[in-house]
Length: 498
View 1: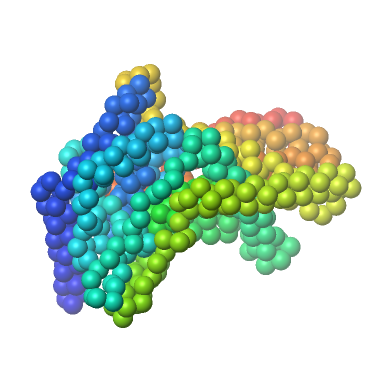
View 2 (view 1 turned 45 degrees about the vertical axis):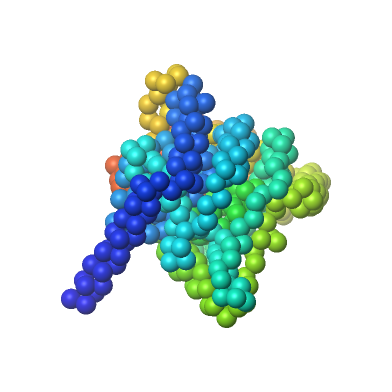
């Protein structure tokens, strides 16, 4: 009875919070109204694409809604445009060409209205409307938490952004961050394979449903709950390029769908169909639970951090995060220079070691060759992510805009190429060819495909009440990849008796 009463009380509080946000928006909050109009104008400029280009603030508002209870999330996200939900986790470079125009529009509007932030007891900010006119709330990042000055008055630490990047600078920063974090993702995945594989802990193998990449897929999905959903708006407040590097670069490269699919195809080609089906079902359940646990623990951690900030503010200690923001020309150029230097060192080192070790067939040849071809895989996946939310069709006659087509295409394409390389290695049957093809599979294809983004998109659909669409998306990804893998790999193996 007590737990039921507590749940009812929590639901009632969530409904009151939602009603308060909705009433503030209906009262004509100027910032929310302008944000909605900017989103609609951006949509009209992209009419030829037939879908909305997700703004940063709109994506943060949706992720923030998922941080709340399931009932509240259903209320807030149930009517959100499906093409917007498809872009929440990753939209690639889509919208970069329109971003500067929209940002200038925001600044011009803010100059005409110096409205202050919401009261201290409001942890969410009203931000625009969804496709049905329902108010959508955006999170207040940790860096925007109010501090209390010596006079006891609340003072906001929000500062106007004095510097805007050009399109070329923006693009270069994204590419360098993606590549550098992609290297780290490959290193981590390879290390987890060795740690949990037959050579060490012997918990995973190619001959069981617990495939070699399961630990990395679990870890990546867990971290996606933290950094891709809970802390995304907070890190984005520091740097847009940093959050893309962490989520799309590191976690997208840490996890791999093509390796998972190929292991199941390999089991089925040997007649172990039960193991193959169990590996798919069990693996999907594990990554779904991983991102759920990651989201829940991340939410608790963020709440604890906010509590500490409020306690420090109450005793007059100021928590100023603004100096961490990459919001000036100098900071941006310094960070870009550091990332370019780091990328150059990692890439040159990987290529040199790959050449030496592949020539001598020494240990580590697969790792360094994989690192050498990893950046193009990350870049291609990020580029394909622009298709998310775009739908299928020409002009305004587009269908399936709810489907993350970019992520689907990246995973299916990588799975098909992985199967082709695997059967080629069987046909050649030499140590050098196997090493080279395994390095390409580890690096390029491992970074081209992703489980963390895929799991986060399924999670987003489920939390928004789109259970059927989540199932259809997951089933389509597995069926297409497995069927192509069977046709490309298993059939030649059966026919040629490799």
